[in-house]
Length: 351
Image 1 (cartoon, rainbow, N blue to C red):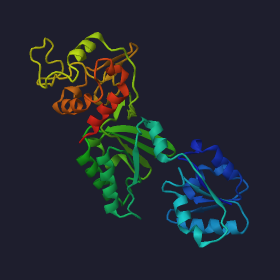
Image 2: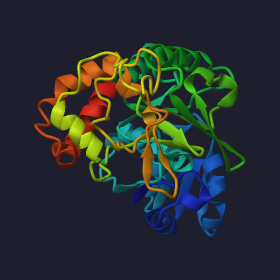
Image 3: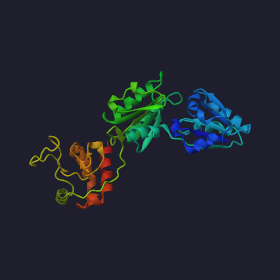
Image 4: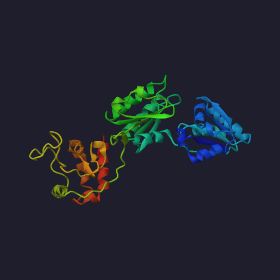
């Protein structure tokens, strides 16, 4: 049996199934750095270490040992199917007959990085910036497509000592497609210890990354709170409809006429020239901080004080187009909250 095993990003993150696979193996083959992280699990086993770039030879050696009747573990950091040894194995395994094998998954670097940052993942794309085997034109196309689609983007292998161009070009593309304040999470592993930081896209710099770094780029819904990077999924927080909001939407089911309401005693409640069509936000409480709202802690109140999005002309235009298909009366603001939050997301993501 050849077991292609993902040992996770660190010694403490190895799975029970991976431990059992190592235990049942006679021979363990892997990149020397990965072998070091599991050395205490390998007593009594034949251990074969090799350098970076010897992946094909590792697979050939694993097959040779297997054909001698030995159980072999072929180890990868993270998950073997994500830039790991599974891809190499399946490229050449059908050169041989009667090969018995299984793939044992592991915790990926992107999942590990996400856990250190908070909850940054929604729909996401994982892209390696290594152009050793992949044309730079392909990397550029993937980064642009992911950014245009609103994917959260995880960048593997961002920067080598002599390989800087892919990262520089990727950052240039991201800055052309995403707002400057888009949160970017950086998890850099130094001697087995994660160095975690969150910066704005405009501050993303190559001095912050190396080959031991995972970079997670948010989208327009991603925000930070108390050092955590969060991309909401859109769950509805149920709150009774305020009577003033009820009165407003009974009179104005699609909002008031677009533009500033300079006759209002509270104008401008956010900024001069604001669009007052939705004096009471139809999404309240959205409970998503991407536009500036936040909970007033220990009071259970969602504050919109720092959110100006619903008072921009573009937001009013987009929301109004979809609102009539969702609400026919004030009660729908609570009864159809999930559909309303999908509309909010659609308008935020619209380019």
